[in-house]
Structures are given as C-alpha cells and as structure tokens.
Amino acid sequence: MQKITPCLWFDGQAQEAAEFYVSVFGGDSRVLDVSHYGESAPGETGSVLTVRFLLAGQEYLGLNGGPQFPFTEAVSLSVDCEDQAEVDRFWDAFTAEGEEGQCGWLKDKYGLSWQIVPRALEKALADPDPAKADRAMKAMLGMRKLDVQGLLDA
Image 1 (cartoon, rainbow, N blue to C red):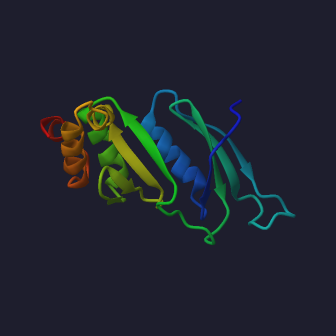
Image 2: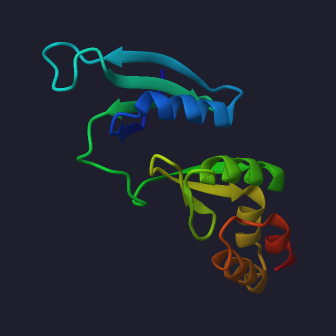
C-alpha cells in the first residue's frame, strides 16, 4: 500500500469518474473497491461513499462528498506521455466532454484538471542552450494541446 493517496472530492460521480479514468488509462488501472453510506452517515443510505482505484499503478480515492468543494486548477494531475500519439489519445479522451486549456492543460467532464505532457517538452525546456529552451517555452505558451514536433522545431 502506498503511503500517500490523493483523494478526489466528487459531487455524486466518484464511481462513474473512476470507471471512466480506468477506461482511459487501461493497463495497470482498475477499480479496487467501493464503499457505501450507512444509516448514520450524512449521505443517502446505500449510495456510493468512496471508490478506491488504480490509474497506471497509482492509487486514488474518489469521495462523494457533495457540491461544497468543486475542483479548481490549484490541483491537477500530470500525465507523462511518451509521444504525440499518447498525447492525442489522452487529450481526445478527456476533452471529449471536457474543455481545453492552455499549455497542455485541460479539464475533464468532472471538472478535474489534467496536464497532458510529452516527454519532449521536459527535454526541450532543459536544453543546455538557453536560447533553445526559451524558444521551446515560447512555443509551448502558444499551444493548447502540446505538439511534439512544434516543440522540437522551436
């Protein structure tokens, strides 16, 4: 069991969201267990309270806590993508009912913010030539979905 588990607060969609995320990530991703509100809990008896799930081997907890605390960009999940095809796959899945942001950021249909980041970006930004790194940064700042070739060309 991992020492720290991110807990994501949902307004009734924790199980739906977990199942969606599992379908997007595939591989080492699955719903682990679901708990339900009991009679003495503040939620509707029998409704889903929490969902524990794995995404790419990382454990998360989804909590149906209510509408009091919506997601904001102050917390996002960053996805390391091997290539443009992987960037495209995650971007398309999350923005299908979500919304695009700047610089590789987006919000999924539940309002959770994600950063879809190709490995080429980190390499370009860490280039030992400061002028090249600066051009890569400027290129990224002008993008919504990150374009690997555009970053390399910069």
